[in-house]
Structure formats: C-alpha cells, structure tokens
Image (cartoon, rainbow, N blue to C red; front, top):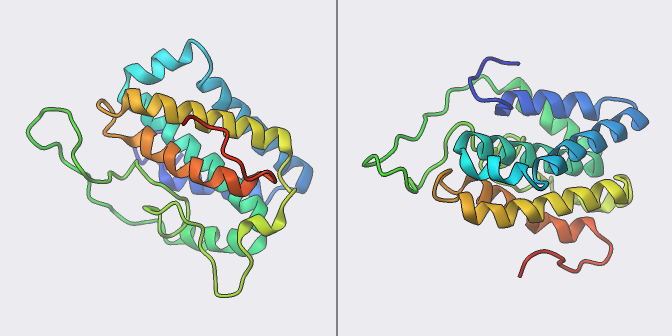
Length: 199
C-alpha cells in the first residue's frame, strides 16, 4: 500500500487497523475474524514448512501476528486506543535505520529492522498498549471480541511460538519474539487466565 518495500509495513498495518476499527461493529468483528482466520491458516499443516524455509515469509507472519494482536487490543480498548493509533499513523512518515548484518554469518544481529515492529502504536518497538493514568486497560472491555476469534488467534500465536524456535536462526528471532510478546497477552484475553500454550 505505502510502497515501503516490505509487505504489511508498519504504515500499512496501522492503516489497516484504523480502517477495521472505524468500521461499524458487525463489519469490524467480521474483518477481525477474517484476518485471524487467514493468520490461523498460515500456521496450519503444510504452510509451516514454507514459513520455516524463508525469513521473509516468517517476517511477514510475525507482522501479521502483531497486526491481529493490536487489533484485538484496539477493539477491546475502545476509542481511546483508536485515537492513539490515529495519531501514530499521522506521524508515521519517518525513516528508521535498517540493521546491517554483521560478519555475513546470517545469525542473530541484535537489533530491530524497520519491518520488525512489535506494536502499531507510536512506541512500535514495544508490545505494550499505551495507557493514560487512570484509564482502564484494554481488558476492561472484556467480551467485545468473540471467544471463537480469540481461540483461533491464541492457537495461531501458540503455533507461531513453537515455529519461532525453528526459524530463529534464519529470521533473527523475529517470529519467536513477536509470538512471545503476543503470547504474554493471551492470559489477559481469556476469563480463565490459565496458560494453554507450550511449556
């Protein structure tokens, strides 16, 4: 969309999330459910091999996870978070330096690239949801996202976490760290609060 080079760049993800959030309730819910369905399909069966084989593909999957997770936070958090996202989108014309590989070994390089965002909000390197003072956290609007959508997203995040260990050498840990950060939010989204992922 924005011509940033990477599929689902930060600017594109912000624009998509804002469009979904500003849609009427039933349309928003269907759009979020459909995005989660696509993400779930990406981690199903034979697709896992394609994700593990290519760093660009696993990087795209990581960005899709961040987008879906932030969408859940946005839907649950309401208008306050939506306005923060809108202000982040307005200020997204910046140039972040790209990380350069050290030594050509293809291993971990210890930094963040432009296409490795962890959030759609202004502090895009942190998975934390912005919160002002006494404002309730996003989980206070519990029940806004359908349980079926949350279940599918949780399963996709758990699959990504397992796959992230396999891809960590080839993608510099992008999928692993993204799914790890997303997995940290899973307990807050469910009423049980019990971790159901890999141990």
